[in-house]
Image 1 (cartoon, rainbow over the protein chains, first blue to last red):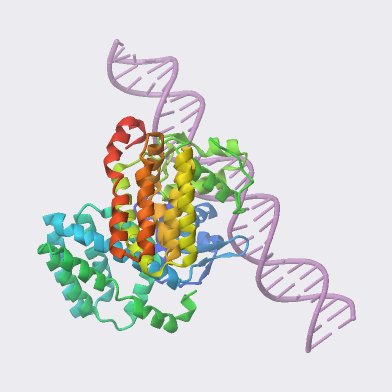
Image 2: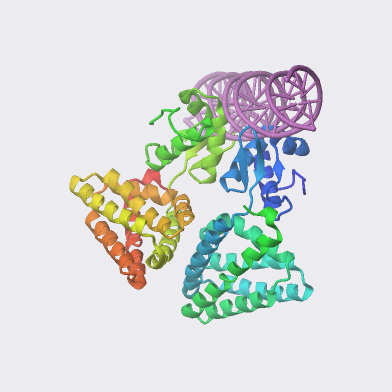
Length: 226
Length: 226
DNA sequence: GAATGTATACTACCATACAAGTATACTAAT
DNA sequence: ATTAGTATACTTGTATGGTAGTATACATTC
């Protein structure tokens, strides 16, 4: 685990631990099913059990941890049913958002999208998939923010914790980033052309890709799934 | 406040307190802006501060409480921006869900919807608006559950904490329930007729109503809003 | 009278101790 | 060798005490 405290914003120890664990879980550095304990974490971070417990409560609320009283606490397994519903939520919220973006996105965000897309191309050439993942996230976040729906994006982020672990797994596999990039380009063009029908259609295709791969990933990493 | 412990399922004190506070906040029995403290609640419920704290952490995560370290903890004010985004999320997720329901709802749920609607009519006659509110919730939940998207409904519920307080406020005002009931009837008919276009259109109208009233409510109860 | 300093009574945060339930390894009896 | 029983080392849940930061009332100073 990547354990280092005292550097992040959000002044309480509880929030530090919360963010630290969250990132380690989402990035699969703490694998699904892993057994952790309050005592273990508190010893490793040299703090008391109390803030660790409170971080655990928050993570359990997001279904990233499962707490079994008197037994133990485990990093939650990936639930494909939950993944599909998250994908459903994301698809429909982002389609609605991109349609809205066609009529009222601000020029600043448009510029940011252009710049982002160029950087994405560089990353594909360098095969820097980790950075590409972050840029992918930013691309979608910027669209939402650009038309005044930043909270919609944070809801998507919250419900997508399981889906995101799938996407990280996919990074390991050889994945067709060219298609992704092409779709991003088409989405941006549609927004610029204010073509709502096209934006909706491309976004739908873009966010429907995932489905078929899920079962393959489950076969490749069976111990990570419920 | 309606404080009584030791009766609910969910065996931990923490969960009891969490649910108790959540209901009191959502129903406006604890008014927005109210200043509460760990010590206050723990004394009133005759438990220690620890489970109260942990319940506070969960409620803060849902933005029902705002915790200011060393200052105090307050029931969150209603944020109209957040309400509108919640409405946006609800509208688009429910439209997608009802369209799906047109092709794959199970017959059991259909029956439940029929029964629910009849009970709603009785409640309108009796002017039992509290029960009507619950039936309204059930109606929408049943549609989601009936086509295998129950988690979508729980996401809607989670994001809608602010929106729900608006809806409760609206109960006090004299509200046109006949329109609501008529729309529910049309939605159910559309599902039965498998008319996706009609279902989508009526659901959109149904969930767009709220917008105009929000500012009026803010004028009537200014101290409840941010 | 207005501004500043101080004592006091709050607050949430964190550390620690104990309680209660569970899993496991070991011992002892058959 | 197998099984039953027990001791022990875990786990999370809860209670409690001390710490540090904040608001407020009051006294002091200008």
